[in-house]
Image 1 (cartoon, rainbow, N blue to C red):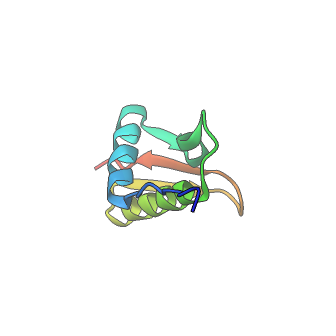
Image 2: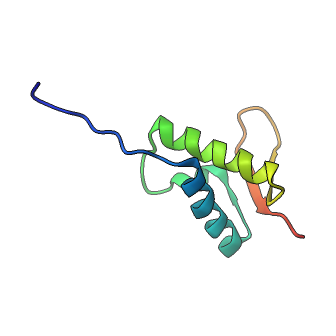
Length: 79
């Protein structure tokens, strides 16, 4: 074996924390803005989407998508 590819483990829980910090600073953002400045790998998008779903389930954020394949607006839920 000449090359060994190593994949970094990506934690949904850790992504939830970073996403929450970003949202609380900015108030709202689009899902696509999570990946500015770099070309995300598919796993990054999947983990980020799962983190959004968990935060919605926990009633911490709202996520609105106006149509199929449109960007998702993520906002901090006012309690």
